[in-house]
Image 1 (cartoon, rainbow, N blue to C red):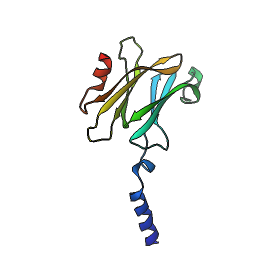
Image 2: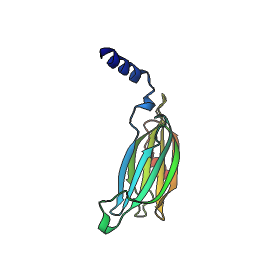
Image 3: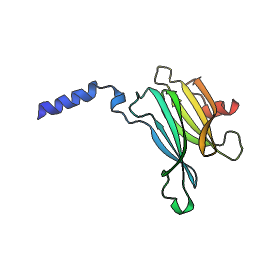
Image 4: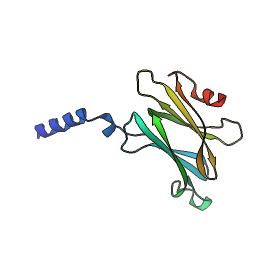
Length: 145
């Protein structure tokens, strides 16, 4: 029994982190009737791959069913891991954008930011910045663009 346990622990230590580390998944309430799910691609390396934004709508009588009625999605490449997701009105039009912040896993820890607006119940690219220094204000850079 001890040999089996030792073997299992050894295998976990040898496997690449991408096979056992949790990927990023977050549910974000955009409005009372609209929910976004932002996630890194399944079965991808943690350091590179893709992320997606899926949108779901519901009705007043089905508010508790936040992710039942799919309305649209977008898939984007990523070079790094999702560090955080924010809902911010970048262009001050009273409609917040979904902002995804990605940090590279290399020695520089460079940042990238991707902003998406909602158009006809689907996420569409609004703005993006990449290769920012590790201490950059991604939101400020997206607003400048």
